[in-house]
Amino acid sequence: MSQKQSYWSRNFILILIGNALLFMVYNMQVPVLPLYGKKLGLTPSQIGIFVGAIMFAALLTRLRIPWFSAHFSKKVLLIGGIFLYLIAAISYPLLSGFGLLVLLRLFNGLGHGLTTTYFATSAAAELPRHKIGAGMGYFGIGTMVTASLAPLLALALVQHYSFQAFFLACVGILFAALVMILGTTKPQVIPAQPKQVQHVFQKQFLPQCGLVFILGVLMNGVMTFTPIYVQLHHLSGISGFFFVAALAGVVIRPIVGHTFDRQGPRLILWLSTVLLTIGMVLLAWVDRNWMLLLAGVFYGVADGAIYPTLQAWLFKRTTMADRDTATGMFLNAYDLGMGLGAVVLGWVVQLTSYQSMFFVLTVIAVLYIGLALALSKRA
Image (cartoon, rainbow, N blue to C red; front, side):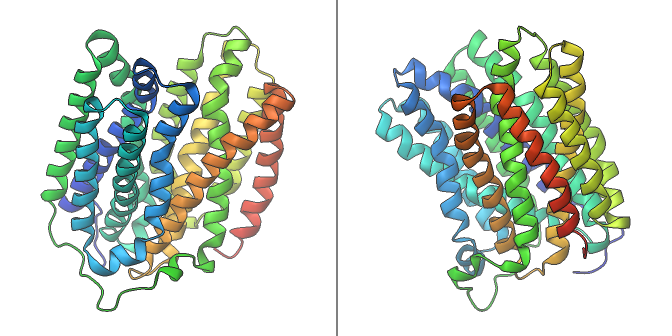
């Protein structure tokens, strides 16, 4: 790829907006689909299977990334992924049976696996290597902004209008995302020789994938259990916690990106994991709303710094030929961390207490500091 002087190309902007819109729909569905399942009479366990099936399908889809990349361009795969999302959004209000809803969610997961992979690699393909940190930082801001607004919009639509209005809004947003991708130019050339599926795991990317796996465990613990933990302490600032976390993440991303391009990942990972540890300590001992908000700042800065740094570090280590495979491996590691984290930390809570679970997260965060420094030593 030629050395471009600016990452603000037409393609990059369209990809950034398209990705933000798609993630807005995903984050709109997170709080609403459980409510929709409850309305249809699904049991709590059925709701969990219904909502979580998307991650299982996305994981399996990413295992086939080498094959997809060998046979289709990124643009075609993005269009196909968004189209699958569209079909699912149109079909959700038409189905009511548990089995059919799970199948539809798996179908949605195929689109999720394709879009999350190829939005990221398409954006990276538009960036000069010496600006990939800053570029991916800005790319992630769009996702964070829409992710913070999505639950508010989704719940307002359901509460003041109907589930049908919610699904109609999802269709409209997805259609706008599709228009963004259709407007891009110069799709990637399909490789002459298809890759083998067994190459989906490449050991040179294990440092980044190992770190993002543990990050998934930590992030899931905070997102899943903090609302309940705060409720038990009779605090009212959980909305403020997530708001200041999102705001801190948006503010820090451009700074982190430029720092990565100048100094690499080591300094960022050290500082952000220390802040993450402080945030976990505050959550473990929280008994005031100001402590909760302060924990949100530390958590938001860490979340806004660690993930894009690991992603930019991964992209800087890849070639155009193996970037799609590396991205699929990276995203699967994060999703596995999120999924396994929910199960394991749930057991910890059941056997001990919510406070003990946050102490466990604090210990993991402390160990994460050393691991991040060790793995990034030669970055």
